[in-house]
Image (cartoon, rainbow, N blue to C red; front, side, top):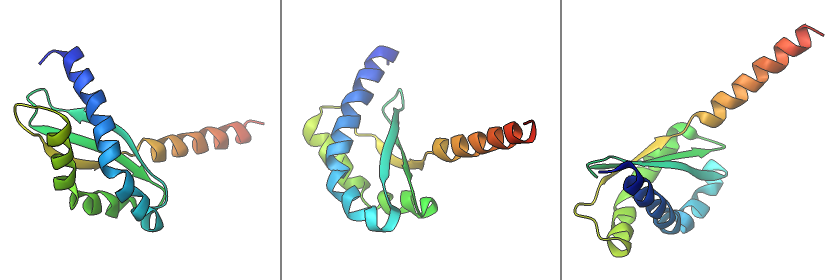
Length: 115
């Protein structure tokens, strides 16, 4: 599939997934704090849809917990879009925020050492 078409599909899917998970994510805030959907990646053959999420607490448990609701997301996608096949939904924890925080911390340490 062409990259531009894949990007358009990902953009549409992100909106659909946001709508499908909005109420669920609000319910989960007591366990995980603020939960965000950072990115989605659709395989070019439409076989997998990786949803990258992050949270303030319990990141190791978040993806496992959300995986139980993958069928709800699939049903929402099927109602909103016509795809030749519905991808398998996989939730992945996005470590970007943690890595960025660690990097900033190390930069601050180095800066303070040289002052």
